Amino acid sequence: MPETAIENFDGTKGTVWTVKDGELRRREVALGHRTLDSRLEITDGLPEGTHVVTALRPGLRDGRAAKVQEGTQP
Image (spheres, rainbow, N blue to C red):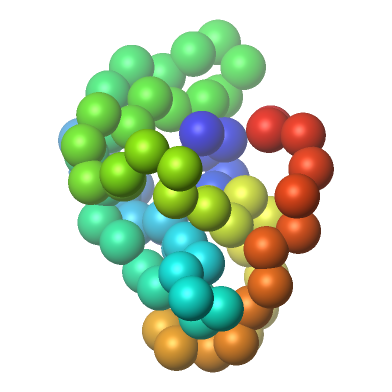
């Protein structure tokens, strides 16, 4: 996961924005290794297949309507 997609990173955990049923949801995740290209391994808290917001923008809030836009995985 790009480090820029993770908020409140404290070295072992942080939060990410996900899209579920057309709405934004904030999820706390456990983080592991950091790569040389500033990516972080998510070790817990994110089920397989979950859509994650990788380009954070102002105005994100729980429950706000959102659409999944498929693309390449960053």
